[in-house]
Length: 222
Image 1 (cartoon, rainbow, N blue to C red):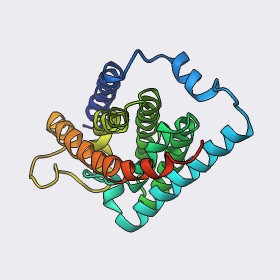
Image 2 (cartoon, helix red, strand yellow; image 1 turned 90 degrees about the vertical axis):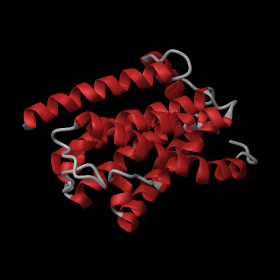
Image 3 (tube, rainbow, N blue to C red; image 1 turned 180 degrees about the vertical axis):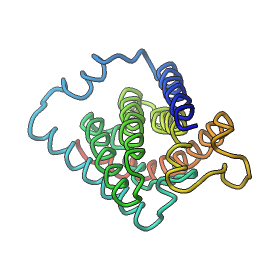
């Protein structure tokens, strides 16, 4: 059963990544991501400082959400307040590595806090990949704020639900929330539920909190 579940998750993650790639504005490549992260004009102490501060803010907000809201930070319906910080990717390319590193750190802390063990590494790897792709999209499409903010929403809605059933089982969830449908026997239904739930939660935070934050921060020079 575990082997079959692992194979399903692997196929699901691969399919989600392919879908995210096709939905991103422009064609994604390793070189393009590298250009965004590393080859920016004026790369130096200021860029690194911005990336470090953004990573710290994202990690701290996620840890605060995990501590105070618990299941709402990592459960089937997610409202990570830290996702509002994704709007920083509209203002500086340093947010792309900053948000990604912050997500890695926050998810590592989540493993220790929730006791998910090795399974939590799925969130470290693929949750951080979703953050990376979403932030990259936001930076590339920054001229149109509403479209740019779709990046984190789409990336998380497609990628996170691919491994969500395994993570939920580690947290003690064995059925699709609000139903009696088994996670182990209905992977596709769980994926669809996760895509909708994660997408709505992400949109509420990114647009509800992120847009006002963007208007406030856009007034200063980055």
